[in-house]
Length: 163
Ligand SMILES: CC(C)(COP(=O)(O)OP(=O)(O)OC[C@H]1O[C@@H](n2cnc3c(N)ncnc32)[C@H](O)[C@@H]1OP(=O)(O)O)[C@@H](O)C(=O)NCCC(=O)NCCS
Image (cartoon, rainbow, N blue to C red; front, side):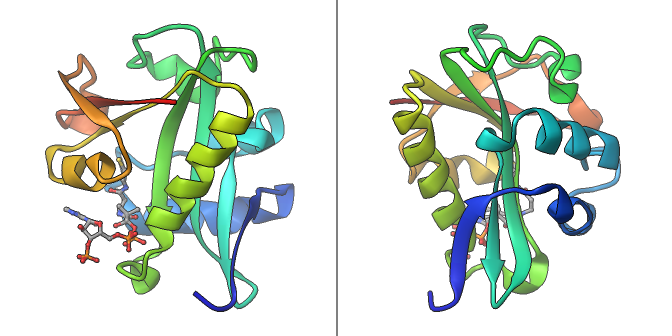
């Protein structure tokens, strides 16, 4: 897509990223501004944004760990985050509703996977709702089944992409 840039986040992107989260997820599931700020400040190398015509319209953020169980809520505040961890764990992928269905989410995920591979990670892991399993399967993830997470009162599947 013309004018689409995928790049590492900067501190100035905080408000745009929060607005996207708030528009994409029900309130109990959306990342708080404080969580996003922590992820931007502490692990920018695991946080990409999609910019279209100079405007941030999508984002993907993560933490890293050696642990296989990724359901720990505190990890989302990067408590227990280890930059040298073998697993890259995606906390959220979101594209502003006005810009969805144009391939931007897929491009963010592809670039993220390339980045994780270049960082020498062994896997990318995430939790997702049932409906999005096919979307992630298209990017090579396999379904590990329902996880123990009850984040936001929902059920979440654990998915893994071996790199
Ligand atoms: C999931 C998401 C990031 C995809 O972004 P996108 O830019 O629309 O992604 P792409 O254009 O690359 O791919 C779109 C495809 O993803 C799948 N998809 C997207 N949302 C879906 C949903 N709610 N249920 C099922 N499939 C979905 C469809 O196959 C869709 O194909 P279509 O455009 O032909 O309908 C975006 O819909 C979003 O931000 N959703 C809300 C937040 C969310 O649920 N994020 C995932 C957290 S685990």
